[in-house]
Amino acid sequence: MTGIAYEDLTPGQVIDLGKTEIDRDEMVAFAGRFDPQPFHLDEEAGRNSVLGGLCASGWYTASLWMRAYVDHVLAGSTSQGSPGGNELAWLAPVYPGDVLHFQLEVTGKRLSQSRPNLGLVEITGTADRGSDRVLRFSFVGLFGTRGEG
Image (tube, rainbow, N blue to C red; front, top):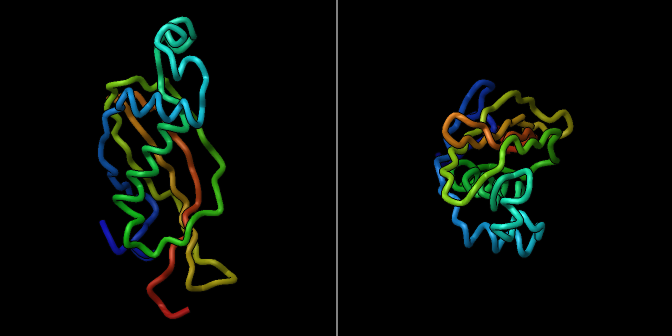
């Protein structure tokens, strides 16, 4: 999808953001730079943790979701960023070789009272590994309207 504006997003709408396979080397490199906890960097430390093996940083998983969101929705859209969110849940560990399926659901929307050419869109993002949900978060996206403001 490209060219998405506020009017194109409706509550209940689900947008498929595709799938990605977790690359071990990229996962470990991300952890080394941004989240260098032992279970994200070392096989043995991962096995000896409650996570049961070398696993991805939740921030890495969220970053992969964000990339899919940019590629499938934001690129070419009227997006004006986001003021933030109110939920972030890492529901299960993610391991090298896992294939994650990313989606978003539009859960609400409203026009800005102070800027009528701007809409606030409530979004829930998810990542699933088969039937297991591994990531869920919610945030507000700001999108320009097509109308005159």
